[in-house]
Length: 554
Image (cartoon, rainbow, N blue to C red; front, side, top):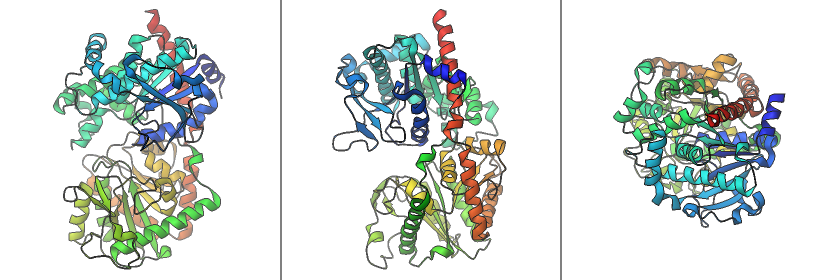
């Protein structure tokens, strides 16, 4: 560790990181924070505190939170009368076990309109067009900022020794509130994906061909995103240090938020999440047995493990952004290329689940022919779900041939879905290859997780991870464990053919070659260890402190 980094640690007596996904697993931000935590904990020990939303109940508690009322000098017993905020102190049940405060924020709601008016007066945040989850994010982050101030006072810490890090637009109001009420704290704001960039892609608009023609404020009006965009933009401009998770997101921020980040902070991974030795072998064996059994029941046939290649995609259910469309179409192209192996292609993305198809786990060898053969759970919107609809359309055209079996697992793999009943990380070793051909992907944890578990992956150059591979490594499935495919607004057919070709090359490779690819994948992932990438955060902390000092001198 550099001398500068050691000095930075000495200058911070309280490092607080706030996110809606602390102890609340929703998407990639949870993975960022939970894998980064151990390295930060080693550096700052119990000067480090994470703050997340208390959206849990006694009946349904957070599976990631271990309550401990004695932490932080019994801070949980300290009443926070302001806005009737409630707190729970404990540890996050992840490597490093950092301290966590879960904040109950319902009492903030009655005061929001007055705070919104003040934020317009002070910073120009336009909350007039707010809707949906805007108020929820603002209420939580304001409560989090109040907790930060109360905690510093409780621990007798000078606010100039406090560094507060806020993630995504959902916490932007908290950052501005903290600067208003306690300007001595150093603040950081991280954009993991701009709200406007994601919305442009989610609405089917071409992001890349017209990238330099987009104006964030104009698009916010067109897409009814004024409030979220305004909050995100003002937080980025007013933070003492603004960061983004990749060069792709940095350029997106420059174009749509009109500010380039002071620091780019690529996302690393925590190797402690990866099982080793015999445990890995057992997970692979058990996972494959379960998947082959489910596929056999659905497709009414027997799959032999040695003759079957299991390919999967996973992540957030964004049909176009995450490349679910091109993944399915590439499987259709693959069927015409010919291969001696059976392929089970899994789409592991959560959807609007009604209930598991219980017949899949029954002792009967066959299931009723009226049960769909491509999905493990009934959906509330079976007729309109984009993934299910595309699979049905391709199957009706016999596009997958006889040896490609597509199976949609539309639920969070937390070990209790009713069918697979294996958590995502425990299921990863069972796979042979993953495909993440995203159209819009600020970083891309799913391909990084995949190679960390020794599963080679195909991804796109529109992900931060894909760009990192292209800049630092050889673009080869067998030499690096990663193949990056170019995606543009106009090369869909070309890209899907390349993806299909890469899948076929892997399938047809000898098992020794596949093992080489697996080992190469693990070696590549080691270079994304947080112990290397954390240096960018130390730089961000220094910049935040320096710019805070300049701000309070004005």
